[in-house]
Image (cartoon, rainbow, N blue to C red):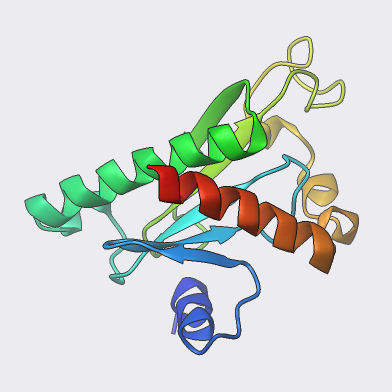
Length: 151
C-alpha cells in the first residue's frame, strides 16, 4: 500500500489528526510540517498516479475541488500568493500540494527571497520544529474547515 493510501486509511479510521474534510473526489489534510503556514494537501480518493488516468468527469471535478481548496487555504491563512503542485515522484498517488505564500517566507533563499518553495532547504522545511502543536493544528483545521464550508 502506498503512503498516501495508508494516510487515507488512517483518516477513514479516525486516526489521522491532520484530516480536515472529505470532498467528492478527495480528502483535505493539513501538512505535517508548517514552515509555510497553512500548507495543505488534497489527496485523490482513487489510487491513480496521473491526472489523465481519471475519467474526464472525475478529473474535472477533482480539478474544480482543488481550486476550491486552494481558495479556502488562501482565505484561511491570508496568503499573498498560492503555489500549487501536482508532483508524485516521491509518493506515486495523485495529490496536490497547496502552499500559501507570504513575503519573506524563504528567509533569504532564492532570488531576493522570492522563488518556489523547493528553494528552501528540505532539511529545514521538514525539520520537526515545523510540526504544528496539537493546539495550533486544531486552530488551523478549524480555520480551513470554516472557509471550505463557505465555498
